[in-house]
Amino acid sequence: MNQKDYPFAQELITDSRGHIRQVIINFEDYQQMIEVYEDTALYRAIIEVKDEKPLNREEALIELEKE
Image 1 (cartoon, helix red, strand yellow):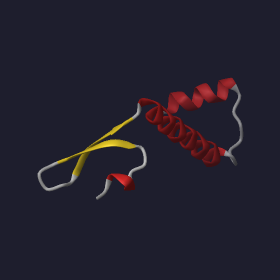
Image 2 (spheres, helix red, strand yellow; image 1 turned 90 degrees about the vertical axis):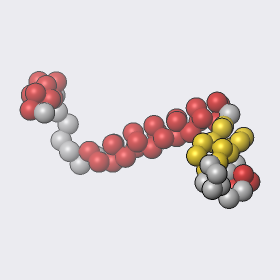
Image 3 (tube, one colour; image 1 turned 60 degrees about the vertical axis):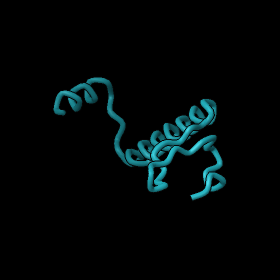
């Protein structure tokens, strides 16, 4: 594996067999990756419940108590 295959990687740390064990990246790149991950998770959650009937506050509290 070549570092050019990992555009965000500043450094690849490998074991004695050459398997990548850690990746060093710029903190700003890390923050952007986390934002994208969170946005994707939110999008998936929205899609998952898009056909459900909205609950009022009391109904939502009752549902939460069931869990």
